[in-house]
Length: 249
Image (cartoon, rainbow, N blue to C red; front, side, top):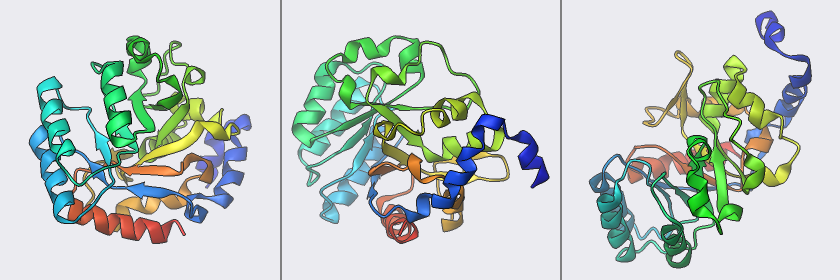
């Protein structure tokens, strides 16, 4: 305990007061299954599983897919039972027309991006969608001066990334925590696991224990739209969703 106190900067003390009103008391969050994968085949397998289970809503993660693979996924989605994709994690080479397609066809409200998309000026091609863009911070202890969350709608807090930052009090953590009073910034979140032994996020969940870190997280981080960002199959994600829904109540 004394070690933790010594690491606290004087202006960060309020966050530990916030922990008393932590994420576990948030029962308004909507948890979305995640269409994730490093290939189009992996994502389409999840789409097929959703079809078999008559699932009509999910989040979508496109970070790893080049244009030809994305087009395969879009085709599969257009012919699927999925009619709503509130949150999509986009990548640097997408254009505003693509975001418009997702917004029109699947009612997407939240497009999540990385710090590097500010650094490389990718956001310039997404003009007209700034009110739908949400920033996911890294945990590398570096925030470019070009990163300006004020230009867009707010944060999509990756909860495990924030936990890594809490443990080290890094610059990514500081950037988010310094804006915690501005509630409009905290509308959506990515949720995955955290490995306490190496202080890293986990995208393949092995046990419900991998979510225990949420007990230490302040409530302001959790948006009303929470996307599961795990590579686990839909069957397992449904178990996570059921567990986390109770956990957050």
